[in-house]
Length: 178
Image (cartoon, rainbow, N blue to C red; front, side, top):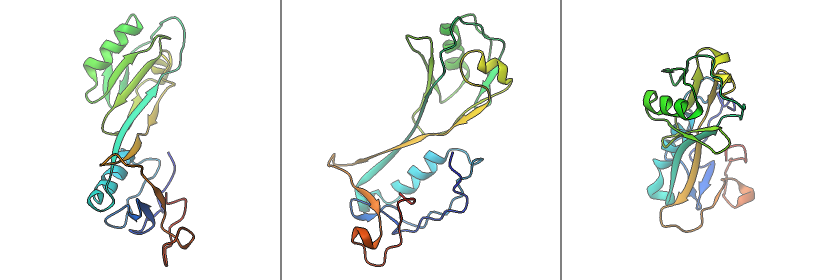
C-alpha cells in the first residue's frame, strides 16, 4: 500500500467527466495499516455519482505463487478465519471457501489459487507464515483491493486533475491526487 496518511484530496482536486469526483474533502488516513482502503475510496467517489455520472466498484483479486507438488505444512488464516490443512490443492480451495466468508477461492490450471472478493476489502493472510507460504501465499501479508470506474450510461470516462493546466480556474489538483 502507498502511505497517504498526510494526504487530503480537496473536493475540486480530481475531476471525473469534468465534474468534482468527490462530494466532500477526502481526508481519511490511508496508511499502510489502514484496512479496506479500496472500499473507502470507492464509497467517497460514489457519494458524488449523481453529479459526475460514474460509479466506482471496489474489488480484490490476487493469485498465489506456483509451488509445485502440494505440501501444506499446517493451518493458516485468511481474514482471521482458520484454513485447516488439506491434502491437495482442490481440498485447500474447498477449505478456504468453507471457512472464509466474503472471499472466493478458485483453483487454476497451474495449481495456483486465486482469491477474490467483490467489495474491495483487503485479503489478509496470517497465522504461521511458513504454512501459508508452503501453498504459495507468500507468508503473512495484506493484499489491498482495487477500484474500477465506469460511467453509469456506458459512455467513455475521463478522469483528470482539477488544475489550471487542465482548464480549471484556480484548481490545485495534481496528478498525485488522481
